[in-house]
Amino acid sequence: MIMNLLNKLKNIFKKSEPDVVWWSSIPNLEKIQPLQKSINHVPNWFKNTKNPIDFSGDTHNNVKKCPSFPLYFNRGWIMTLWCDLLIERDDLGKVSWTTPNDVFKFEFHSDSQFKDHLPDHIRKEIACVIKPISPWKVKTSKDWYILQLPLFYEFQQNFGLIPGIFPSDIYHQTNQQLIIYKNAFKDGNKILLPKGTPLAQYIPIPKQDVKGIISEETKELKESEDTSQLFISTTFRNRFNSLKKCPYVHNREK
Image 1: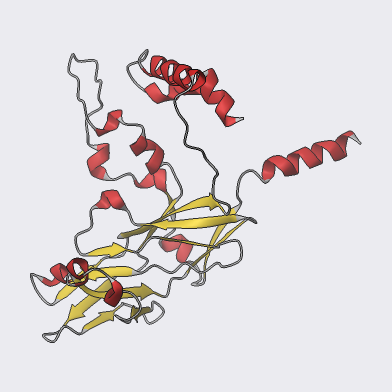
Image 2: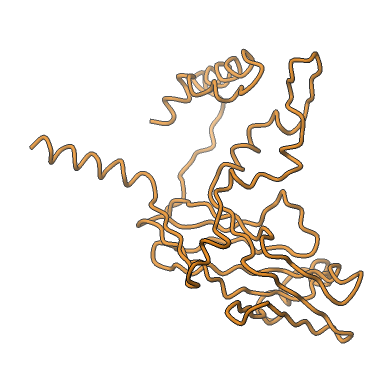
């Protein structure tokens, strides 16, 4: 009886976190160009930014003082381009692509699918939309989806990525839609997106939207805010790690 109870509890807690499995339809691609945890792909400009407190007497009030950046960089996986992609545009504006091996395929989204429906100011900046025949598949446990995001802090100049959510518990294909900008061809009629170029970030999210309320400030909410601010202001570094000790944070996580 005790073992049955323990197994039931184990299943309950297991369901609170998604199982995420990635695989490639191209054999051995995971050995050549694997997906990476986001934390292993922090942009160099952020890593090179000085710490807010370096104990030398200098203070640097910069982005590393904000918790949103490390929390964001620590979520999900980064998919990088698995092959070189050469994109050419002729004098009439027609775009074509070439890859080093026929196994790597790409398609074009016709303008009527996406581009033609956009506001004029952005539509005029787009040369085309390219969709990789992505070799990467992903499966999540029941009632978990995958959020696809562009890499906002890579600041790519030649292309962008269309964000979206797909039901990865039943649909496993990853389809990136790459917006190629006309500005990419300002110095010539060819651009090369090299193998390893960061394409997208993938984060598991629950299928059901989270319910929430809009509230006036209550005594409990005010006390929670005051307590969390006190925890933050009592350390020099890793200030937000101290919030794990805050009783209000702990109660909200239950």
